[in-house]
Length: 527
Image (tube, rainbow, N blue to C red; front, side, top):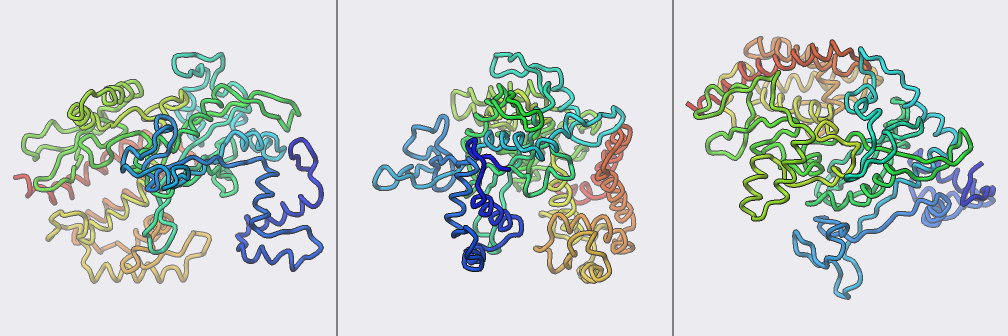
């Protein structure tokens, strides 16, 4: 039975909740749901609006409304709490009456939902996965085998300068969380974007934790924010509470206990994570969030490149060794961020932010469960399927940036590429649906290619379709080596020995790319 405010739910409320669950899980349209009460007159059903209000009341999950800039520049929280005008675009906070906010950001608190999860017997049982996970020191099978999580075990939780009498994950019921955000266009015309903030519960088994019903939605920012920290302010306040601990009911032991939850990983595409980490981004002079490699600008453009070998760049610094890059670490990252934030003049700020690639101290640094930058990994989907492979396609078809592609051996002629696109589409007629979505014509329907279809095309179709298509065969062999590496990366488990081998082989692949492609395409601009 369900509990609401300590009372058993009656049959009418249960019926309403069952109907609403059907609507959510099966995607029933609002107009159809509104007809349920007429189709089943004996059932205590109501309109969708009344039902949603009732469900919200029964669940106890109430959104909190915060004022925000109508252009989503900032949310009026924390240091912006008392402002009456946006510090970025100067738009008024209130309408003409001086009382009604121009826009809202609705935040869905996480503490009530985490409490509800551990108070639900089925959820609480599934969430034992983390504490029951057996770590094999020779291999990686989940995030709990990673270096960051294992480094937290046995370490005291700290808030500011205060060390709490609690170790990270000392209680089997402690929850590990991951945060993700990214901008997307919800409509086909792509003239409007939204920035959802979501959490993942890593205590759930891997095969369930990323299901839609298990995603913890925090809210959606209507447009790309200029200060993302201001929208995450309510979340960080709750995460700090959860580091200290909050009372909750354990459905398995049927007792009150102190619930802790820790954010251990944050991910998204490069621009999104740059916002979260308060970094200048991928086209900065110091573009990488993991290391301090420096960018070099091609003459006459604003594009920075970060090759390892810089031997032909006039006046450039020494080349980089891919096995010994100048990696960032938590202490130096926050020290540099503090230097930038403490700048006394705009000129000083510009100098330091350009030097470090950092624009200030990120709000998430208040959480001792995170390590900069290791808690902010490059996610595979964006890095490979949404960036590397589409950019390789642009390179092969002579459309990658403003490089000189004339006569290069990696070029695939327009006619041949069109034939590859047609063959790609026809392959869908004989490939079982279990492999994933049908891959569209990669040549003529590029706009319909998504990360999933790029992965299917790369792993299963391209090695066959690209055979003999390049002007120089070594570029095909170079691509096949990449496919072999990517296939190993997505294994469900991988040994540390294999990780080291992959590291070495990716280094060689990049060095070969520079030797075969990058230098040939760019060198004429620098000599």
